[in-house]
Length: 366
Image (cartoon, rainbow, N blue to C red; front, side, top):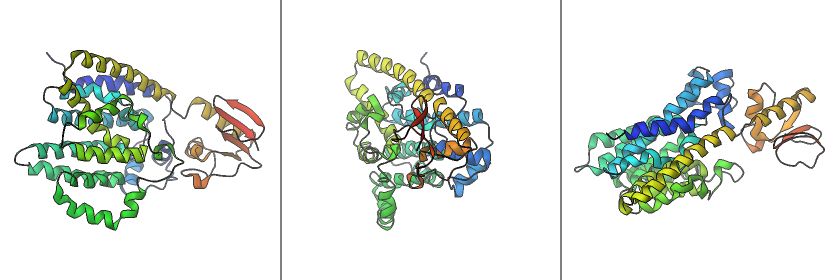
């Protein structure tokens, strides 16, 4: 009896993500902006609308919040698997482990941010969209559902509206909506992708992010139905690493189609072994991603020796607020405070006498 691909995916996801429950904190910088709202009623990040209502209403229990992120990752992965099974009845189940050839799914859902709640809805929309297109005639209910799901996703995360543009590449009448919208909001459309060159998630050309799964693009070429949107989202990922996750369903489907075309048992075995190693590697990344214990120690030390009046990299801002320290330097590099005449915390050499080193983090007197 064959195992359910969803069970296989659940087990592998639990191995990769489950280690997160051993951490006493969360990973990422913006995660703490959202945690401040959920746990301390501090809207320092300036959330509005549905995201504000969501994070204000969620109970503050760190284990339960991680369980919520795990559930969002699992639902997202299930819809990606179902989409792969649309394009390959025989090999679609392989998406259950091929998805781990990229660490993107697990790492994105380790962040406590509003887009993590939009991704499951977006991938559900994507599945119903292609389910509708592959039917003959086109299934109208599924198409309406695919489009309707973009509304709650868009209210949670503005990046969801790019799906309306991508759907126009396959369902041309949607261009009557998307093309005027692009022309009307062209600055926001382009600016949402090409943001800054100083924030990691905004950096372009980070092809290594998808790791081995990047080869799945070769399989995408085998499907004219997948190709237009795959190119669109791949280009968005090339322009800004923030959007790499949107190309994930297409690369997974491409990897499945590549397996189907090559039909090589040895290649299937190699891919499975690599995926299993990748699961372990991704779990390690979850444990090692910042903030680390060194960050918390450095911040506490600087706070103590400066009587709470110290400077730090703006990226540490939400961490400082979470730790109960006072700062106005958070959220953007435009708020970076001056180190001159201050006790400073940074991983970069500041050209000042160093007081103490905590791992990669230094405390300086400038």
